[in-house]
Image (cartoon, rainbow, N blue to C red; front, side, top):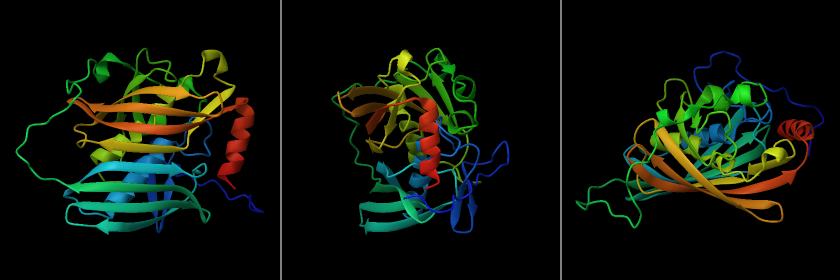
Length: 294
């Protein structure tokens, strides 16, 4: 339910920004590198995923490896001060499970969990039913995607927060495959972990795997309601490759499956449930902005 007074959108104005978020006491303030493509008032899911993964890892010990991450988007995450609640669920000898929430104006807007394993050398060679060969393409084989020039014009995560490379460069939606490189840390001076980089990239699967026809570009939305990542090993290097396929029902739902790789080869999978809605973009923008400030 909307509040009687609309809270002011608070985005760190420094440009170029030094990080995705700035710490202000107990809150995390989005910078101009966090908005999504639909509206400058709403954070991109990849930026939210990166923040949540960072906060959950921060509550654990560094020698463990983050191998499963899940995130539920309960409502649009505004580009406004966010508070976090993080709680260790289990801290065993071999695994840690941590859960957390992000809140805006007192309301929970996102909820996440992280499962971490203690690394140990078993002496066994890696095994797989599938090919472990490196991807057939490299980041340099794809063209830079200028999200500002090809999108709605405002500063956003896909331009200032993460580098996006897709075949041809101009068309991201439905490109199926892309390479991603996080350009900024989540917070100033904190190097992104492998899971933070993967989470920031994997959220793009629903866009890469979109089944919307070009003629529907301004009449259909496909926002993912969640993000689930399972990895066999941590990512290596700054670049993460996401290759997505989708299945959309005749109703208003869909499922995107992504293969997540680095330069060495496949390392895991991502899944997203997608909420599909037919509408015109200006109406969606006004409704999204209203929801973000509710």
